Amino acid sequence: GQNIDQPTEMTATEGAIVQINCTYQTSGFNGLFWYQQHAGEAPTFLSYNVLDGLEEKGRFSSFLSRSKGYSYLLLKELQMKDSASYLCAVRGNILTGGGNKLTFGTGTQLKVEL
Amino acid sequence: ETGVTQTPRHLVMGMTNKKSLKCEQHLGHNAMYWYKQSAKKPLELMFVYSLEERVENNSVPSRFSPECPNSSHLFLHLHTLQPEDSALYLCASSQKIRRLAGESDTQYFGPGTRLTVL
Image (cartoon, rainbow over all chains, first blue to last red; front, side, top):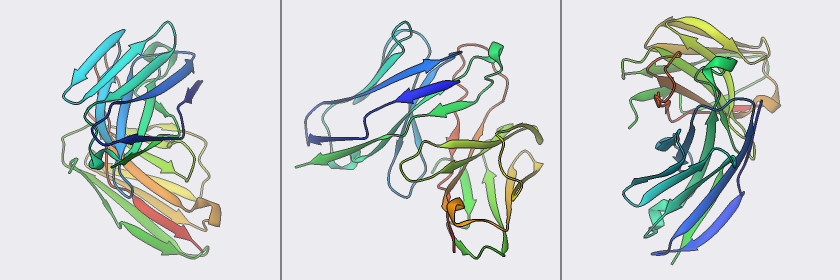
């Protein structure tokens, strides 16, 4: 099975940088996703990591270390609209029957303040 | 707009009612999913369909009954629900259920149906 841990809440200031961590324990691994979810809305895809290292996409970057079971999402130049829940999700390994099944963390509620 | 729509957006029902949730995807995907999202809990996968065939059922109570008539539509039929079933029900779709290692095969979510069981 999978176990995903991420902080429940974080607060940051507009214009700053924030790092949201995610650790996981898994019996099979084939990729890690980050989603953003505003209250009352659909989770929207932010990033995907399957190899170790940093993936950069505009103001958002995501890092993965498979040996440490660790990922982070880095948000730069924070804006008020970045206030949302950020969900970390791990996909199981196809060889161990994981298919495209995603296991989600509880999400990190980020509040951006002036 | 993710290309996945859900109706209704809000639903209030009594424990003896029967209702259905509808999901439609306009992305040409082959796999569709139902998730349950409760307060303070992770998203829980309920059902997975690939090419209209159910491939996974995560031990969901029989009061939830899915239906996938074609690759674009997914329903969740509800009957004799309990108050603890109150939650946000999310539908998602992806290109295919089986993929090669390394492909992202991202799941795209609809806005959800906020269900309240009285």
